[in-house]
Length: 246
Image 1 (cartoon, one colour):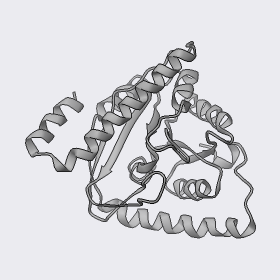
Image 2 (cartoon, rainbow, N blue to C red):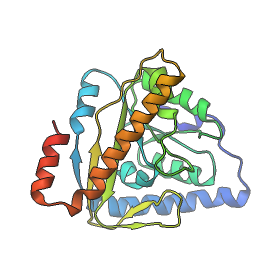
Image 3 (spheres, one colour):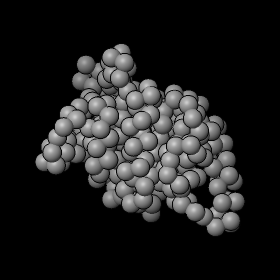
């Protein structure tokens, strides 16, 4: 796989002071991930959807809420995933940390370089890599799906795979626009994967909007299940396993 610098779009030009901060902060994030990640205990619902797509020799467009980036980046580390992040200061920090966890990176967002970033992701899907980016990133509004995943799925003929993760014990950054989750060591985590969303390669604006609404509903359903998971009874969890793993 090529390095991210060969992929895209020029990330935002930063001041020398900002550029110097990136390796320091990204290294701290990476160290935290390497220390905390191995202690997390994941339960996965719906993995059969991904196995089926890969069994058909197809690739996935992973779609999720920005809030879950840490939990997602640890689960999908070293799996050859190409991730899109914004080219601003925070996005460059995230991208540098992701590279150290085995991801390839392209830069783009809804406001800067997004179409170019989607073009890069479409190429990587054709080259046999799963791709990932936050449906509501990089700046929200929180929990509102943007059209990017649908546009990419239409262009690449690859299905969207929505998912949500939730940690039983985590610090929630209440003042952050995305209410970012940072899990505490040894927390249990649930990963809920929704059925894939297929997008025809020749559709008009109305159907794009319908597929965007379908993505919104699918992400919300996964989120509702994940965020209730550790509060429901063992019997109800067993019932939900049967539903999501069918």
